[in-house]
Image 1 (spheres, rainbow, N blue to C red):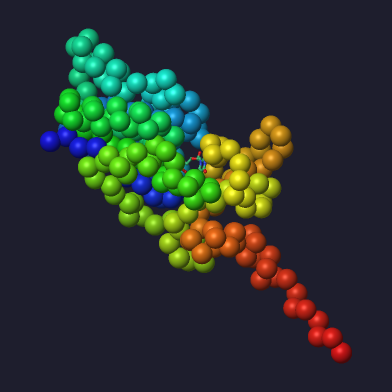
Image 2 (image 1 turned 180 degrees about the vertical axis):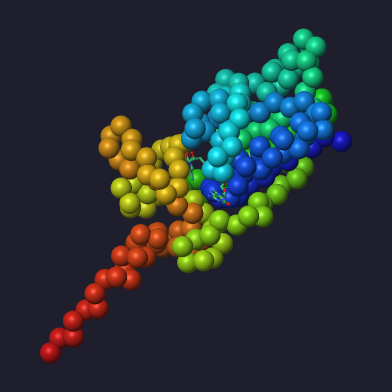
Length: 219
Ligand SMILES: Nc1ncnc2c1ncn2[C@@H]1O[C@H](COP(=O)(O)OP(=O)(O)O)[C@@H](O)[C@H]1O
Ligand SMILES: Cc1cn([C@H]2C[C@H](O)[C@@H](COP(=O)(O)O)O2)c(=O)[nH]c1=O
């Protein structure tokens, strides 16, 4: 039986690497797949992993219809055994419904990869729909770590080094390497444990606090 699989984890937990490995293992056994992504850091129509691997992919935009794409391909004599769907948090809930229909009605496996929550700790609508519909939900085994050493569970966004909790939901970016945007704001991401996300205590701020001089005793 085909299945809708959702692999999730924080940023930098190895999701894109696993997506490429999954594709490799299935392709090595002669299965034919399609790779989809959207808003990848490496640019349009590319699935990239921080380990350096990249693969051409089909870019999913707001109008893309997975059901129509697969039915059209099969109708024209094409073969599809599985779909790899990276950055699935950015897909619309309706597109996740299309993926579920592809699994149920056409017996095609779907492997979706994405983060659960945004920098505000709110579920992405696409991820929420995947949690609702997936046959299997797996949290990645490779744990990203907070600066304190605890397992990182949340994605934080910083602007010019300061953690923020308001703003546009979708801002493509990376951890550590700060990206300069048009308006000269350095946007970056950092993974944190819940406690430090709640306290807005990033690695830089924790360092700054620990290096602050002790208050002088008043005579
Ligand atoms: N130089 C490196 N050596 C070993 N592993 C690395 C290196 N750089 C990144 N990684 C691994 O790659 C993971 C990030 O992979 P990636 O697939 O891009 O993550 P995600 O898609 O979840 O953001 C890191 O958690 C780490 O385990
Ligand atoms: C938390 C958060 C992340 N994003 C963006 C930043 C990256 O481009 C991707 C996540 O990619 P990864 O392969 O899992 O590292 O999502 C965003 O747009 N909004 C957010 O709140």
